[in-house]
Image 1 (cartoon, rainbow, N blue to C red):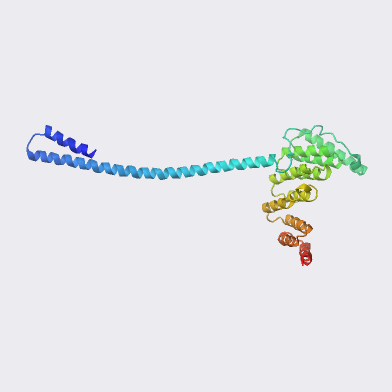
Image 2 (image 1 turned 135 degrees about the vertical axis):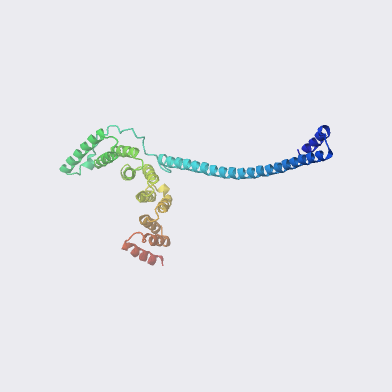
Length: 299
């Protein structure tokens, strides 16, 4: 570009200019000045463009970094939501016991009385329980979305030995309120002691743990089921206790249960360690006595 502009004025000068020598010199100097100025401006423009390009590159990199962070955050939230949904609907290691809300239990207004259970009631108590049952049914017919109504109905049916009816009522309560602690705790107890289905008990308690990580009773009950009843999973007892303690660092009751299990296994050193941790959160004088007793045994 520079040589082109240098050459063009000289040709134009030779072909067109007339006049004295001094005039031509002045005109040539003017033209050269213009050319030099254009060249200087051209360089300044390129420097400006380069600087602007560098600045745009930095801005683009910063923008790309922010966009990447936003995308990662959105992906993380989506992944977390998927994990929570899967954990609630597909409890690990157990059977999913929660039905779809809307499936009102069939014949919920009826009760199947087991006389081996209800026969122990005094007549006045039995009459009062039946009255309470009828009142609860009336409330549920008017307000079928009442979680507490279904919980009460299940409790009354269980009292009369109608365990399947209690199961249906509590399952529906859990469907209405998926994070309700009482519904899953009641189901875990029902499956464990009355329907004797340890896999379903495990499923109910694991669902409760996922919904309410602070429900220490669920960890304790599940650990005891693994330890004494669902014995093919006995090794998971300590794992579920450790999970509960990691979620609830001040859960002295879980630490005490872990100490008991270690004592039963003859590992007195670990039992003492767990009792030492538990006494920080449980103001129970018997813990100190147990520590002294175990130290004597361990000698």
